[in-house]
Length: 151
Image (tube, one colour):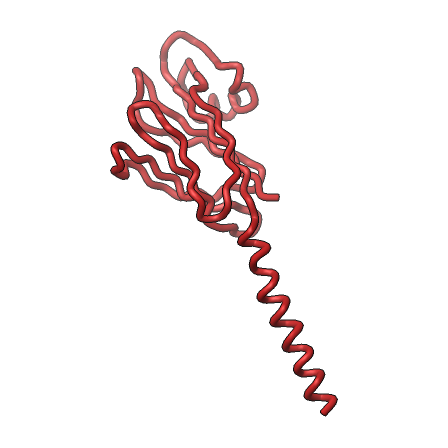
């Protein structure tokens, strides 16, 4: 009888741990910053709002002008879409989908007139950023700097 009670208590403890620990992850929030940048070969200009990431931009891209068009902070749950309006009737959609160790997986889409024109997935180290090249715009290109932080 004592052995049966021990087995029931162990099973109950494991069940409680399994069922009550999962929602903690699901309830997690991902602080996501999205910078929309216009990059071009025009007269040299670096927007002051890009000082923290300009070395990253210049190491990857060879443009002479970087202008910050938008800077949005989104507090998203997993599988929750964050939307940022873009020039040219486009919408950038960022969605954290899950965690892979200490990395945040994002689904990133661009839609124009409700049609998907760009789709990618990135795996972003927690508390870091990535810059993605986007579509042509105004004698240059749009770039998207996306950073994510899961606490």
